[in-house]
Length: 421
Image (cartoon, rainbow, N blue to C red; front, side, top):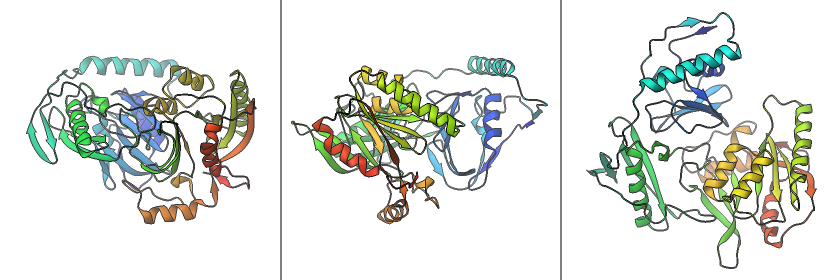
């Protein structure tokens, strides 16, 4: 096969995704389950995330079938045009001296390992680490640049407990320390003043590049990177004795309804890659055995379009509690979901189909879904289901505190053979 020096992708047209991933590995990128540092790439849902070494956030390539639907490059979504993937090169956007080469036979695992190791070590040693600075070059507030300022401590509202869907969101814009890359930082709070203070603090942190992972990028609405979920609260389903919300219904960024709970554990498990019916049956049986091994627990188990969902019904759990995290890991939870639970301090389950899984698919709108889009989505998704019940595992007990949340969740359970989406 030919490994080209340049790869270009055109938005709206099919792309050679396998060739692109091979190209990235050949150029020194490391494939990971999710990207957390420069020099990594990952497939997450329908997206390919690539984090170049001189950028403050990953680039995101969204797929629709085999076509490139849109791309996020340097903090900006592109819906048309052609992208030169050579600009994603780990060495400051230059070609790095690599010419177009031909591989006459696939690299063996041992060869591929040493090739990747050599390129990674070479690129890492030849690239200067960013300077650590507590003073950004500038902070842009409401479109007006102000002198650099030092923010010594996080403002109120940077941390939260339990379910939290802020009332106010404010965005500040600026540029990276070198002045090349646009950066956006969202702030949140219950008042405009609180949201403004958080946005200013996070922009100052992001522009320093010492904490580039605080820039705002979402993995299909996962809400990772130190910020609460920017979703519309539709219903506070249940509250505790002090009036705190314990279960909530929201609409996420791609339009699906989401159940979030602060104390009822919901676990997301993905089927293995390249699954067959035999693989799925073995995976279900293995998961049941792992759940049954959790002594004193009751679980409801469900089949979803791409995996399983388990709900613990007789124990109070906290999503950021290490014991809850360890339980989810023991039973094989999706690592990205475990991280979501820890960062957002809640458990989450999707109650309506993913729009790109419908027939025909519905294109996701930028920003919050409009009322017109929601109406179209609800009409088309009515003939699809989200999960099917696989019954109980364990003691078959349910705490009264969970009745309302379970009743809401079970509206997503199909019993008439609908296709799962």
